[in-house]
Amino acid sequence: MGISSERDLVEFIVDYTRDMALSEEEPGTILDRYFVPDFEYCNDGLVIDRQRMIDHVRPVRKNVDKAAMAANDNAGVEVHQALVRGDQIAARWTLRTTLRKGKTFTAEIYMFGRLAPDGRIQRIDQTNRQLDDQP
Image (cartoon, rainbow, N blue to C red; front, side, top):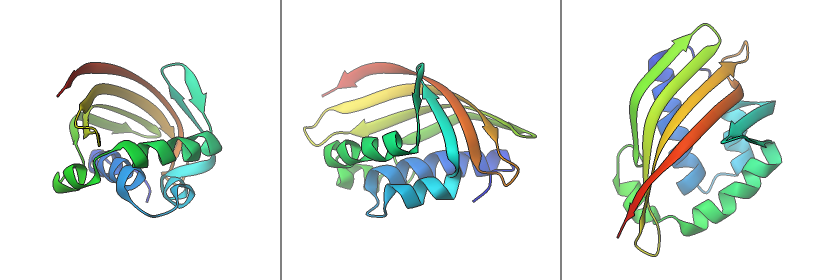
């Protein structure tokens, strides 16, 4: 899947979030669909490479309430803005995830990125602002 429009970017945010949290598919296969092999994902100043992203998925999949997340058509994602201009992307979105222990994790996410020529992601610079958890 290559990103070439705002609609593609919104679909990426929703599908990638859902697939990484809920799918039984190997995380590396999911990453390869959306990212070039040597991508850089800089989240709140921490650069995450492919292996680190794969390692991050295991605890996420263990801790999310899969039934609650699957019941939401958009996987708990609300995209407020999405922009694509040439090889540049930007989005502002909210993630709401119900955890197995009943709490809700909510964060505002501001994402900026650069696309490879094939439309997959080459780099993301992202910052998050966690909102109050709700019981």
